[in-house]
Amino acid sequence: MTFYKRLIKIVALMVILALAYTGFAFGAVSSEEAAKLGTTLTGVGAEKAGNKDGTIPPYTGGLTTPPANFVPGSGIYPDPFASETPLFSINAQNMAQYADKLTDGTKALMKSLPTFRIDVYKTHRTVAFPDFVIRNTAKNAVKAYTTNGGLTLNDAHAGIPFPIPKNGFEAMWNHLVSYNGQSRERRFSNVIVDSNGRLIESVQLIVHEEFPYYFEDTTRADQRFYMKARVLCVAPPRKAGEAYLVMDAVDMYNTGRIAYLYLPGQRRVKLAPEVGYDSPNSWAAGTSTYDESLGFIGPLDRFDWKIVGKKEIYIPYNAYKTVYKIKKEELLGPKHMNTDKVRWELHRTWVVEATLKPGKRHIYHKRMFYLDEDSWAVNASEHYDARGNLFKANFNFQIPRYDIPASDQYFVAMYNLISRNYCLNNWGGENGYFKAAEVLPLRDWAPAALATLGTR
Image (cartoon, rainbow, N blue to C red; front, side, top):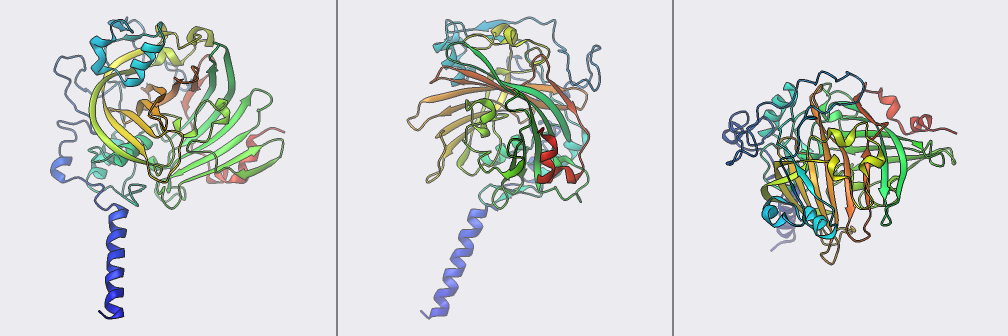
């Protein structure tokens, strides 16, 4: 065989391998499959019908009418189900009766904490979307795809990219770009309860977030990012004025996450590559990793992602009373959250398993994620260490904002089963709020502008 023939064979093999890796097989479904959207499936891919025994009702469009006591623009969302009482409770004594509808994390908490229980309420499928999200989801279904091993999202815009997902990468992309409105402002605290039951508020933060993926103006220069956040620390005094800027790209392979940090003591802005993956979150006093925020956030490249199936499970849902205008002392017990203040409902979820890729590092070697079928948000997760031990049981608290409409993951409760502490990341409480905000001019997203947020 001549040198040139061998070269041609080598080049051809390289092209085949490159095409296989870039994942052209990942993505768009047939028009016949997509026709299920709006018929047997909701506009974003959930099963429209209820379950066999009626404990999950049919989807009828979600919650779009605010309660009479809602004040537009306040950032406070009153509980539309405040008059409801629990149907029943589950604890360590009767958990075997409901084991098939409990996550392993929930069961582990019941076994290790005698006072931990869940109060189960009537299920309400409150998630709703604007019409443009539904229209764009239908378009995405037949054209969106991923390349670079699932790390780059292509030909998707302003809707759920994969309403009928075929693999774990697609399901997690749906979570990452789940609809939270186009921009929002939040004020919240990170609170830790240590193994001795001591309550520590590590920080109070004000966050401005934008989601260019959902902008109608596709000519903006920030379209390569699906999420941007400017975060300002306002308390305690020793950390007040710290700020960071985070931008996550739809092309994780070539761009990934861009992060900058401003420290008022140094009076300078610097790149912050440590803001991601399993780096300890300093604003949560190291009790969580950066990628645990909001269920999961950031690049997907360190894990292999697999859809295990769908499952009906009890998860925190319609968590209005847990989030707004509640004192820390009311909600936070010495070992777990006050179970009287947490509403659990039965919902169908997509179950996604993440296993650490060979040659990659992360403190978690396996992770399980439960994605609410109506919103695509992660509502519960479990995290295992290198020895296969269950390390963390996390639960996200979802708040449908009936005026947008959008369903937001407001905060995440993280229970460490090894060190016996727990923390709430992004919890509103007495002084928190969650409201729509104006889109900032692009100059405010330049790294140099970050210093203007801080104090000296």
